[in-house]
Length: 182
Image 1: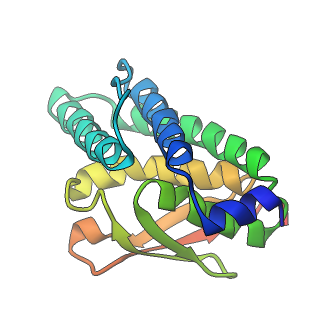
Image 2: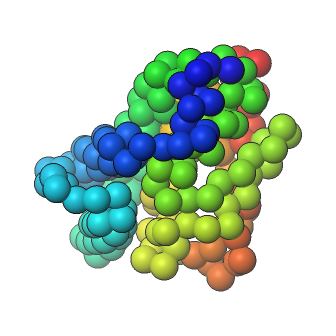
């Protein structure tokens, strides 16, 4: 395991989390064909609240406007995959165990308590977005989750079976590593 990965498991500096959230914000704005929101001067909590608010607003407007959400989801997936690949390189991820650790770190930075076991079973017990996202918004935004995991795992896919936004006590999902490097 790389030193960077181990260090971030122990402590994520605020500037690292803010930088990551700003990059996610830019990727999200691009997927929706919008200008990025100016997030300068915001702390991590404010960034997360603003991100949740504007992403929910973009999806809700897209639903009303009849925007092609499949196209938005494809762009979101592609943008998030690039972020995941970058994260993988920066952290020196090499193994499946590293991939699981990196996913946990990435999600901690955005206020999500994610756990992944060796078989790819994913559980999320706490998600800062659940209080702000409707089930529809959550489904659209989960294309970012799938893309990020694809980038972190060199092609793995993420499928949700339960979501907090649908009244479940936790989100449950699975990472399928088929086609991904071991």
